[in-house]
Length: 438
Image (cartoon, rainbow, N blue to C red; front, side, top):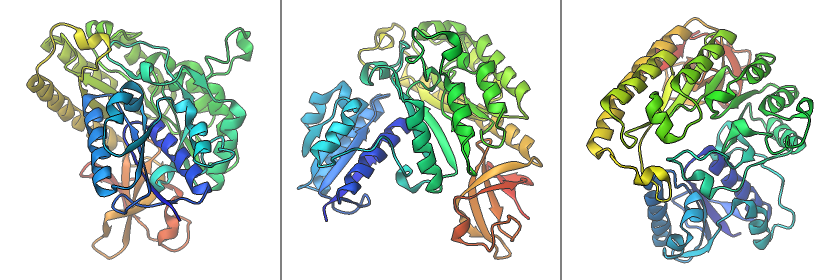
């Protein structure tokens, strides 16, 4: 039986697309092996958001060739699209896929007669599944290379997404994460020329999926501040059991002058207004974000404005990215590039604020009834009395560890509890995680 292995860098969309290829190869008899085993075929799905992503991609390809000198190495992803000539020069590379729209054609070349219209399982054995609903981005932020290396904006038809969601739910996945390159633009391409009453939007998709049968929840991945609108919040509120009260609202900077240089569509006040609207609509929801530090020309005053905006928004998690110049973007040639040591220092200060905000938010969740997805045994498998400890994530995107003492309504403790959704009340917080002891 031929074997293959996969390595994925980057976003949830990349992970979804790797799983799509994986299921296609398995359907024709290939066996997936772990990273340390030898393989006949190696698939690398690359990322080019930062220079580090490019470097890691090259290092992985070289290592795979050293460890699997006879393997065919196929490389795809955003770095492969941006610089295919660099990929082809690496040892062992036999194929470079530069357009993700050609994935079904790729599988057919490998012998898959009828590639599926989606996936049936989660990537990497996770208990949550990513559900790709659209591709492409219409925006042209000055720092971002992604619109240049992804396909044009396109939304998947609702029936195809619903069929895929049903498969994933039937296969036991209890969290579906809706993802795309620009999730908030779902349906934009469908709506051209249609009367407004017939428009399909992200809120439409949320309603359709939340009405499916089964015990599962939906989580939205990243959206823009302008897209956290009343229509979407209303759809989320109609299904409190099915839609997680959590939004990842991409901020990038809290300074209006930096946002203008980034070519973002809104200022800090708009983001804070949408955060307040979300909080007013739900019971202490979670709000997470992305922030770039050290954007060209960022002054100390502008960075302080970002810190102030983060405090005002009350984010529970901040993904922090020191600015990385991407060749081909306007920001790469802007004057006043920030030195690396300054970017590192600002990233550290923001990380310290993030830890403070996270603790403040998590402490507010103590005593609240939360829905918890059990993902596996905790790092410390038992408490001081010998009872097993389990870990997982709550509906509000907070990690939680609990002891199973027969009170979950799931029967006896054991591996069978993994992948279940449980209502639980945290009683304290230790080391940045909520704790629930029954």
